[in-house]
Image 1: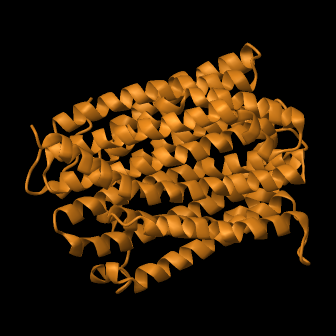
Image 2 (image 1 turned 120 degrees about the horizontal axis):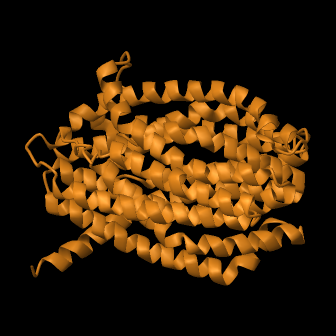
Image 3 (image 1 turned 135 degrees about the horizontal axis):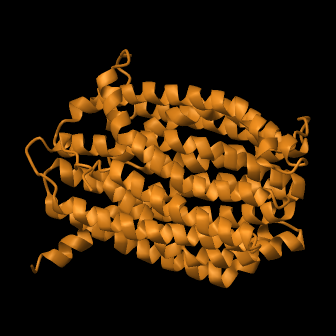
Length: 461
């Protein structure tokens, strides 16, 4: 028992070292939204509203392939933990086929999705800009899905530095190019919302090509022979990745769509509420990136412990993640409570938009703790490859409780965006309770065997 506290502290340190670059990488992706929002906000309120709706409709379907490819880190970490590194390269090459296929499907979907804007009831002055944004950014989708496969491979091997470096490197391209294309500088056309879409697509391709070059030349990955040869798609391997990953994708999409559908419903109220919501949700998303990074680190730590047959290590990795998340979320809540007015003012010069956004940031402070706990628990469950039951628990929390509460308060009772944000808080709180309970039950009945990498927690209730 005397060695337990030091071992726990060692786990906290190991998780923090892995999580810090991941959180920074996620923060860089969150700053993509910040850059887009600031550039659009200063271009005009209509442009900001168009980018808000376009961004919502971009990320709504994108969350399914993002979540599906999250099957790679626990699979890779379990193989690594069990000393089966020779199997990682072939698995990675199959994940590239999966990523490419998902990218093509999403490209097709975003080509036709703008046709649904008017039937959704989106304000008429927002539709042209949102359509132009989506038609531009779709060209970067295949690159983004391939980038995710490469990133998840690296993350699963406890090397998350490239995620941070390439994430912030992408911002160095996006910010000047997005500003120039939006406003028409340096001889470039003034494209408004579409300019931000084209700049984002260019960033996705630059990041994907840079990551592929790094993996091909880095000595760290040389023994894996990642690009030694091209293999044909193998359905049994793809089916295994889909079996684990697709429920993750659906779960991630259900959580993300709770926020995105909230944005679309607020879009029915006019450009001022949707512009304020875009600012507040962007700030909340930035806060979310830190616990999301901790959750991904916990996925890898739990998967590695499962691979080496260490039941106590699984629980210790989860406890370390909880400790880190409680600390990060306490800081986020304090920043939102104390600086909501100043933060909103950074985004827009429109005083009415800033005032409403500042109010919504107070609601965001309410759900910092439940949001952190639910994403951490979901990440730990992914490390166990326990994904199907959590998918249904998420559906109940987000869509059985969160959306009805938000729609009831916001639309039926006339509370507007404030009511919708209370619905978000309710959904995240229930998800935190259900997913934490699920992990404690699942980790208590894990069958530990010498063939640990193939172990998947059963999805019995």
